[in-house]
Length: 160
Image (cartoon, rainbow, N blue to C red; front, top):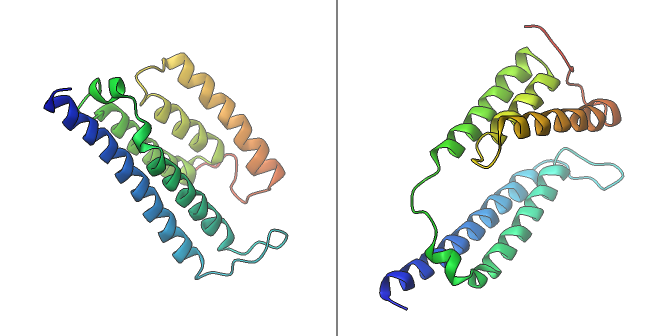
């Protein structure tokens, strides 16, 4: 093993450790912020219950990612691209902006469709058809879960 691949090996581990630590930090922040609200119980959830639960899940996932960082195969560590994936970054950020704008002026259904469709295009392996099918499927799931089952006060469609 030469020093170049050894450096990449350490870099791959470091990224996994830093990623896990960042997830733990964000999760702890969500727990701290969510605990300033009423948490409640499973049968009578308060406004802080969901952020605290998600924060705890993020902390656990961060621990798992950091704990399994040493298991990255050597071939995966040496074949990684060192450049940023700008397409993915722009698609994810664009999908968030689209969700905010369409959620306010279009409603739940167009906002959900847009966030899933644009985000799916961030993956170079997805085609337009795959992104379209995923967006339609997730829009149906969103309507069933949030609008029909949970009766979230977010209109399906709105104009202006």
